[in-house]
Length: 32
Image 1 (spheres, rainbow, N blue to C red):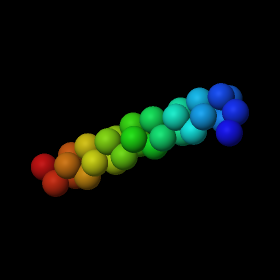
Image 2 (cartoon, rainbow, N blue to C red):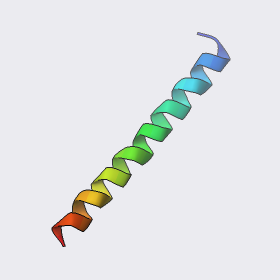
Image 3 (cartoon, helix red, strand yellow):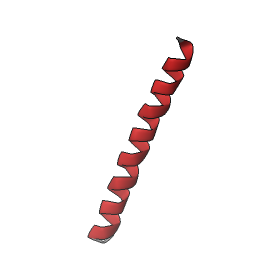
Image 4 (tube, rainbow, N blue to C red):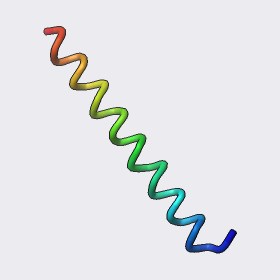
């Protein structure tokens, strides 16, 4: 893999982690 591909993967993983946290917070908010 090239460095560009690795950086792209890292960004994708980072973004998906942010999305997961966002969804978890939304679920929590709906419970209250």
